[in-house]
Image (tube, rainbow, N blue to C red; front, side):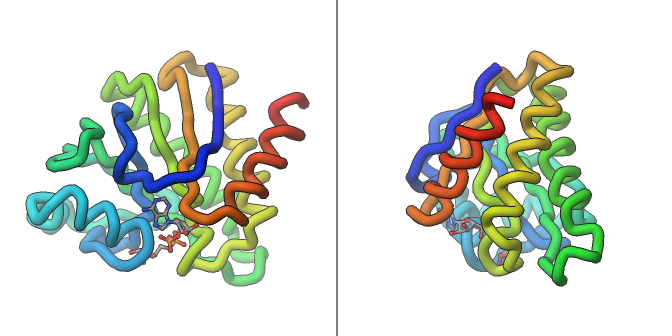
Length: 171
Ligand code: AR6
């Protein structure tokens, strides 16, 4: 059971599943969602069209299509509205639901982006605490997935995650 954070492009990860920071339509968008759709190819959009969307805080799974990852887990993070609109429980739920789907599909290694930390505007330090706490809590009671890797495009996001893992990983 382990967690880590690296810098990189999540679409290039050779892992069992990568997680997409999607929106409720599941029909693609900007940020990491756009990058994943470009890398996975048009079959992903065709597949997502049949899925009927996904509510905030929930997750669903598709094949990885042209990615080297076997699966893409699509989760919809909360839009930041100031912190009083249930954002932290919705963000924690994204991680729990994504890890539950990964377990159901026997994924050993899962890569996450910083869900809600781009277009959706979640403050990075709070997002790091909520995200890391959710994964640590999950790992206390489950043995699969064995490894969770955050893959950060931005140095600033990487630095905050690394520092927060350093503190929370020892608690
Ligand atoms: N690899 C890893 N991280 C990435 C990559 C990549 N290739 N590309 C961007 N990031 P965002 P959100 C980082 O905006 O805030 C979309 O339009 C990025 O730097 O992708 O959950 C969806 O369709 C940031 O740190 O996701 C939704 O409408 C992090 O990924 C909406 O944006 C998340 O930023 C979701 O917004």
